[in-house]
Amino acid sequence: MIGEFGSIDVPALRWEQPKWTHRRHRLVSGERAYATLEWPQAFRSLGLSSSREGSYTFKRGGFLHPYVTVRRQEFEIELAKLTLDWSGNGDLQFTNGQRYHFTRSGLARFDYDVTDQHGGSLFKLRKDWTALKHSGDVLISPSGMSNRDLALLITLSWYLAVMASEDSATAAAGAGGI
Image 1 (cartoon, helix red, strand yellow):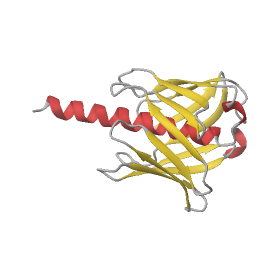
Image 2 (cartoon, rainbow, N blue to C red):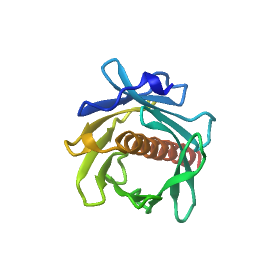
Image 3 (cartoon, one colour):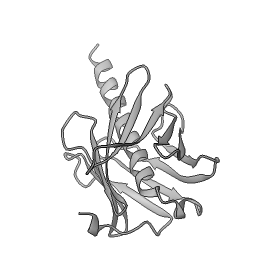
Image 4 (spheres, rainbow, N blue to C red):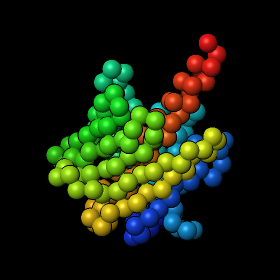
């Protein structure tokens, strides 16, 4: 599966969900796929990410102190942990000391700006407002193009945006029944 992807070499990409009934997403530019993100089990938070750089799993945890663990799929060893605050902002800390910061653009939006540990912008994720299918754009900065963790960071930010969007929709549906 990894052989089908190219390394990220364009500054603008698009996330698409080909079928609204499947929790499978593709990061594309034109006809070329750069990564995928899918949830193999309905109503679960375990996400599987694949790109040329590798395959990873993302899994949410915590309630009062939410976090997402990042693991290499083939080893199931924790590679990094993203700790989140109440507004969806967070810091991703790798076991090797590398850090990245995720800033959510407002409580009503599911967009993220991702920066390196020095505050340098890597990319911006802008999720579309759609009722049934998830989609969005990724705009990569020139410094982001050379980042070795770029595919992982982009898929992790999409994981956050989709999960937050689905949580919001579930809460809204629940509130409608009161």
